[in-house]
Length: 91
Image 1 (cartoon, rainbow, N blue to C red):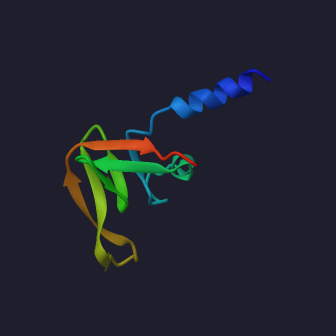
Image 2: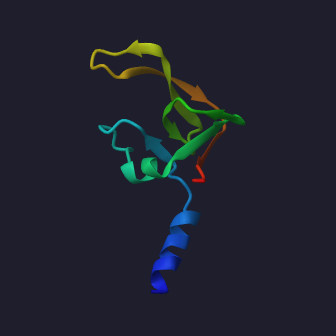
């Protein structure tokens, strides 16, 4: 019984991945992390429309308005800056 709480404790201290994508077809898509609720601070500002991010390369992809590509996916713009992912706290 003691192994289970310590496993949960380690899961809570685990940092978000270096790169994550909302697109299920992307090799960087991880549903388990997305279900936990990953938030992004970009250059000190909270962003809610991030489609993909990479901390080590310092960029995020955000939707470009309501524009769609031929496959119906949102058109994105790559923005460069300081990326800080975090897990949102459940209240």
